[in-house]
Length: 174
Image (tube, rainbow, N blue to C red; front, side, top):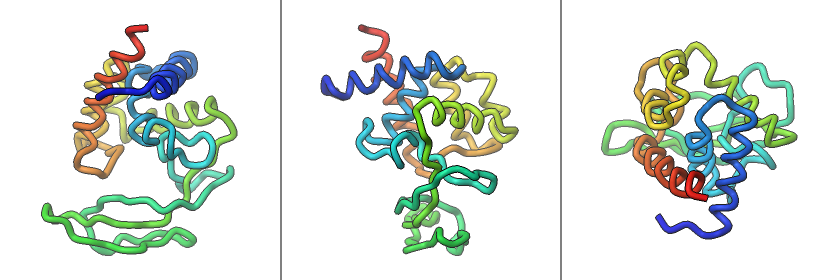
């Protein structure tokens, strides 16, 4: 993938912030941020780079955003103000939802990265956490259907691997 100077600068900023604020491989963090935000163009709020939803215990600021998700059931329910806008069955038998979801709205990049790490330390990612230094293995394990699964999109594993490779070229070849 050909990257612009602005994309390279953005990626290096995230990479360096991740080196300082997390113990997850910064190549993985930068790749995931690029994928989730379209290289910083569509983050949620000012600093939510990873599409981290509100969850049940968050007392901080939130923002309601229209998004898309895949589920195995046609009748997934959400608590208002979250809502299902449409559901379409895919050829694979899964369901493609257009929904309005509440996402966390962080006050800083450091706050976002702190919450990002906290989420990966949950028991559902116990099989992935020991591999956090290996960006490719960590990416595989968060999508392997063991414990929690990070993303619902079927193309996610291939996309994240490709972006890790791009981040290697950008961030390790300064």
